[in-house]
Image (cartoon, rainbow, N blue to C red):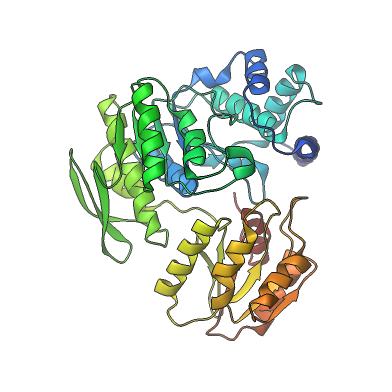
Length: 432
């Protein structure tokens, strides 16, 4: 490819991405009618590949990544669809260890535009159709598909999965998913398919009850973390997996936090279900797949002295996990926190959890038009008696906190997944 051709592809890709972003004006609209129509117009690409479908409040991205890498290390051509992206839209669609090509995104977008009504189609519906078309064209052995929001009415709930996964569940997005843990669980349980095995890490009694009832209604065999399989920490970054089928001792993971052991155990259980369906997945593949899995923005250490950690915690539950991981990893350290949140999140509760442990907070606005006004966020922090200031951008806020940090301090950026990309770029990280 010549330099002029490369520039042409880059320019066309940027135009394509600009069009996709223009669809965000419709916000979030749950429902399967429009995505079903889109996929029908494309010849139903989602039916041309086997899939694993992963839902949940927390841990679904990490669990999906664990499964994806296990499949790759078992010798399968695997695809992964997750959201959101951090720096490049192509991060949402990975095939065999690489980001999907710009040419594939351009081609798939052109196909979807021919069959969609741009006045009715949301960003996530359109991009899910693009992802399924790209994956179908790549013809992988299997794809791991992460739910965007909820499950029952999410655009990804058009796949026919071999195995479904529901990670732990907490109250979230109640404007869309209903009030209370049982309502949220029922929406997540909407991905359960007749006869398809279900692996779940739901711990709350109300959520487990709802998921179990839906699984029984669909004749879906259910395996529950803590009852049918378990992951028990055995050392730093090590755990032992036990199920009724096998024991795997001293499995190693790279991601920090006790909760990642549970996510890795869910991935081991998925591997067992795939083995029972005839997929040859060795113990060595499970070990290496878990060990090499990383997921940007999940308690990710970006630099040292001062240490900079980015974590996309964006719910009270995930903020509590972050707080616990901080205490384990940096005992006694009070971080300088760069904090940004979205309007629809339970930001008051998240501030209540994280602000008291901070030395100082810098409030910023995450990327996108759903950002909470940093002045409003700062007022909540100020009410808790914590020193706070406001910055006009994520980058400005990060450099402001970094400038106040000594070599032994910790700078923590958190509050939204939409904080991750700019912070990683500010630290010199590029996803490719």
